[in-house]
Image (cartoon, rainbow, N blue to C red; front, top):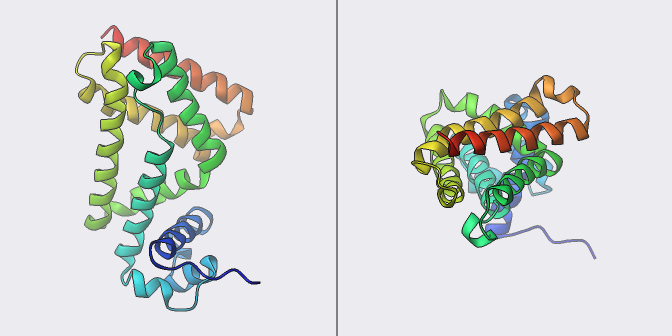
Length: 198
């Protein structure tokens, strides 16, 4: 029996997932409402019914990636038992998992971030997502004795983002998987040590 197409919230998620895939694999020029319908296996007009404008479609991508990020985010240190080593392992693991299982999300995120500089609605969504994720990171940094963890979370997150960017779109692509993992773990520990002694 053929699988029935998703409806309601499931259909919105399927549309956003298909749009993210298209942005990552074809760039923003390849993202159209019709292409999303085809990629998601939905009847023609489905995407434009839920997301009438291009800004709405781009914003749905950003919101969906934030949803995925929060679902995959490591717990706060207090929940994990509490040491700097545990936090380093959690954060390193997060970066490595994003590369292993969600590299397309990272490519789409960078495409959308550049586009957002010309689209205020998309920029608002990206800014909101960045704040939410940095608040979560601050919650992980606070129990480690890092001074002003909310302020420290901003450059810390930017540095982690740099590791992701370099792996999916920079010279970091040339590293072996083992070399990349070693570099990530070393960088994260150095960041934590640096912020703790600041």
